[in-house]
Length: 136
Image (cartoon, rainbow, N blue to C red; front, side, top):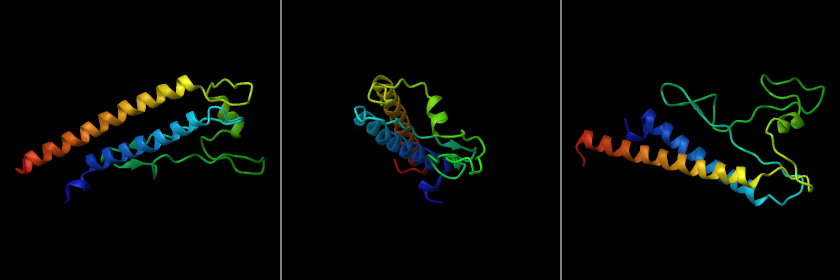
């Protein structure tokens, strides 16, 4: 079995990829802070089972939203997009923009620290495996 197929390394790789994608989404939110009617987005954090593989299919899957009264509601999804926005607690600027720069910057710095922790764990896990097989 190649070292890259180990569940812990696969989970750490998935987590690092999620942090990279989240950084892109948060940067998009910040860059659109002056765009009228822009609503900030964020990714759903991946959940891992005991084997280290992701639960629920893929990383960052979005729930289906009911946009018409004739649509069937997805389990756990809000009734419409406006209800989903109202839960986040954002204040709307006069231009109709809901981006809070302070909150987005806090998310960026937390994301950066979590990514650094994941890369450190990944590097140390590889080093420990190399020691175990005698290649160090």
